Image (cartoon, rainbow, N blue to C red; front, side, top):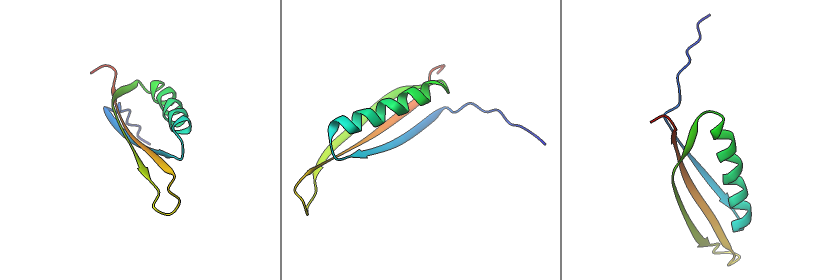
Length: 70
């Protein structure tokens, strides 16, 4: 049995929520998890769209994590 221990260099994660508070909470939880594997936030991109059926706002975000050592 062989183990390969490679460090993650980059990771991109996508988030969605019906309100900004929930979106922020989801992102913060992932930041905390990724900190344990030595990843830090490199860039965040977000947007708001309106649901065509309900007219309610819909929040999305993309977070790019990078290795802290680079």
